[in-house]
Length: 92
Image 1 (cartoon, rainbow, N blue to C red):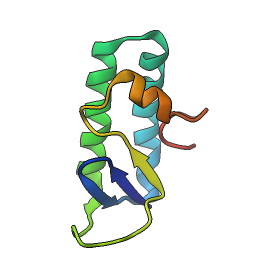
Image 2 (cartoon, rainbow, N blue to C red; image 1 turned 135 degrees about the vertical axis):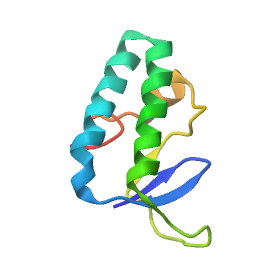
Image 3 (tube, helix red, strand yellow; image 1 turned 180 degrees about the horizontal axis):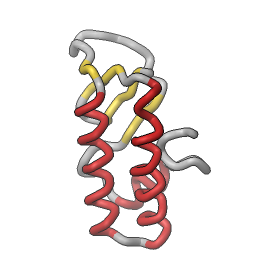
């Protein structure tokens, strides 16, 4: 799956990593719903760091359609809330 981190670029991520990422996504969703700004910031950074760690960066000139778009590291709680689906940021 091709994942875009807004403002950074794209990475190719194996589907097998989504169970681990969904745990962080669930935690992030709880923090957004409760308005826990510090927890939200910590978990968003952990989620993005994990995607960077597990994913293989695509070349800057690659034009692949992104199947999943994640917020920029400096996104606000309200900006991320607007991006959410019923499943959070990561489907599944």
